[in-house]
Image (cartoon, rainbow, N blue to C red; front, side, top):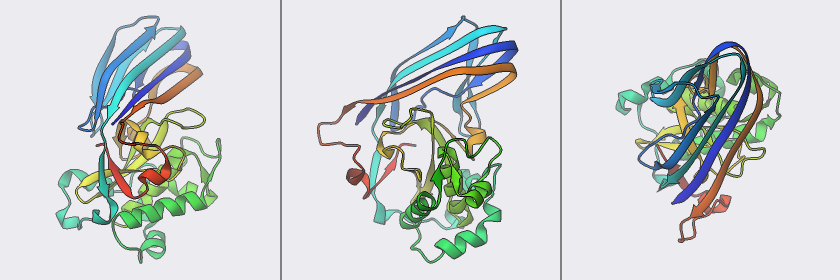
Length: 283
């Protein structure tokens, strides 16, 4: 078990009346529970929580008038991830896949798996199917992609990242997802908080569907997977954007934090060698 304290503060200059949608709140799953949370909007405005997307991500919507505006969110989250032995995690044949995961085999805005099918098959087709192959994809993306802030933008897709061999966390996730889907492995984008991430920020990682469950992966290797706190999931980052706005507003300041405040007394650890032989599921 882990207790993770997460939160963010977002400060905007609102030049014209703007409608905001934020997906910054921790999700609730069988393995992730919110102990407490607070939300502060300055100045105070009326807002609504609503489920968004196919995964019913928890989002907030409100309107702000011209002037300075701030959002501050904090939560204490309890993680009880399911840990499984990796040799037991096999790929499931297309005919046997649950219907609800089938959309995560299709190409999407940032994950053009149809364009990389030949490359994926030539590069990973001979690797043992299952967890071993997904890990090989993560290793390849990590070893062949440089993490460079500013090297991509909101229009950059997995193909762009493959060509230029550079990106940020969401790009590492998009390329990994694309290669998985090209091989017939359902994969989806996950947005969240990550303890020990430097510099602190929202984080993008992904899940692959193996052996009947969603398992976490992060090709960027920027933070321990065992501490990830999920916010939302989707086909790619377009389905799990932290902020969407209609109007004229500009982000002036952003602060994000995720702190592991408690680990179980049984030796739970974020050290990479403690988890490398275990698959982690928090869906």
